Length: 473
Image (cartoon, rainbow, N blue to C red; front, side):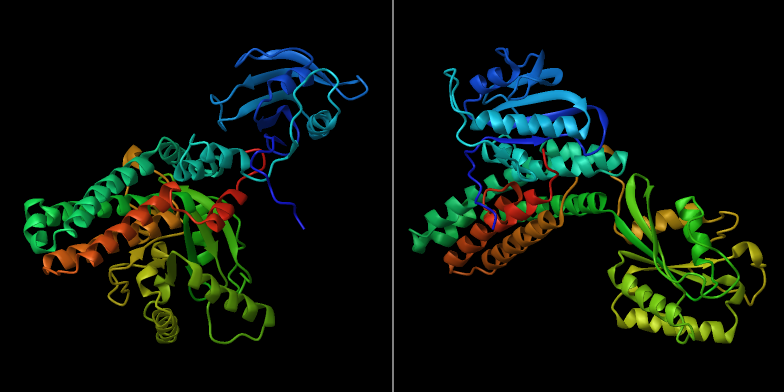
């Protein structure tokens, strides 16, 4: 059973990624660490100055020679005293430095050095969690730290930086402050029930609420875009065997990852690759061809997995064969696929793409693709249109440099805040005399916004958020 973590314990961890590198960093954070830092490095450390020093083990043997930087509280990342040791980036060396820090903290005090209460290894995300606890970051900014580390595209990195700078937090806080003003107004009116309607009219409560709903609509739209940018778009290519799914998949990802042959059922399992389209991470997945019957048990498993992948897709690229558009048997099989997709409630997520446009005469009246996109996986014709269309089907809209990253929980909190404001507007517009209910709607809207920055966030959610960080951050 894991011992409970004491937030007052000094902590230590390797802050750089695992593996070998030219430089590695060991980070410590805690209160009253100046004396300990000097003892570890063998000399006093000037605040925020890089000091070349030798760190030895308990016997005096040199572990490594490198740089030490001491950041006194509160002017540090965590708001506590922070010591960073920059050494050679071998994993053995870094672990030796961590072990030396732990052993030095446990040694009896023989040099008037202030002893640390109990230096221990940091949990994942604990440095950033302490930055949040010490008001260096709010929760949305803390999450943006992890998003910046995990960013898979340049635009995702820039957007995470905007969130780290407070793009989401500042607007959420501004709306929350406006809600507080309205809450004060409504709750004060409760003391004068005979004048409440006139009082709210004079204070323009309803127009102010409607303006707040508009601001929430705008912020919610931006947050949805930010969530797409952070989480990426899961795109699944599906269709009958031999319609060119694997060829189109290879063309989209720019690599021959999927095997392409004229033999039906070549693709037996899902094949995935993450690409960037206009800076948006897109996880493209090729699947086994969909058909009702197969004598191959392996192919049947692949078909089952294909349907499972469609259920999880943000966008389903339904690939159809333009050369067989007029074939009754082929059209009947496509109708069966369409019915099953519609039955699963996924029709709105489908992007129909007719492949092999290079192999047909479009002037032939028997070739009919309707309003669907036409593409050639062989020549690349129509690929750009497919890329634009799948972003649009996922709900992505280009916002230039104004996009910030967001998470599903941020979107959910904004939706709830908007719903509560909408209910408050409905009660005010209807002349509902139960202002206690209006006040309660405004309180719940305010609390929902507070979840974004961490002011009213449950402890179990905080644990889930920080546990997904890398150790040392």
